Image (cartoon, rainbow, N blue to C red; front, side, top):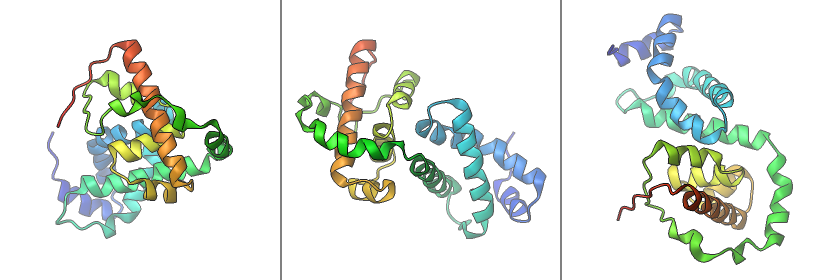
Length: 189
């Protein structure tokens, strides 16, 4: 059923529970598609979505109703995903280790996955979800969500060099999986 989103939003601003439930259900799949890229399993993704939803509701007064709401919500969701990532400190001790492992020696094949490669299959999104962190988070921010390395480094509190290495690691990992699973890659541009 189509909902009148502007009316729903203004009711949400007044903490109308029914409107909030309508909003949540209406945007669940959209928000879930973002959360699922940053979390490995359904429960964690829903947990992330719910944290983000609370933030979205409490910030609705800052939303400019003349603009589409999806991009605005996406920014909040990604911020929540980054906060979660930073709370999980395990990646920090990997940082120095990675620098010593000389990821730069990785085969050049990793660059065959072109930034603009669009792999539309569900199979591919499942692969992306499988990229181990922190490489997976960097890949998502850089390739899917268009963050630059400088911004990724600042947000994740890692060096730019590490950000580039994690991206390369993610590509290498993906490439191996794509070869193994014969996932079809559609190249654009």
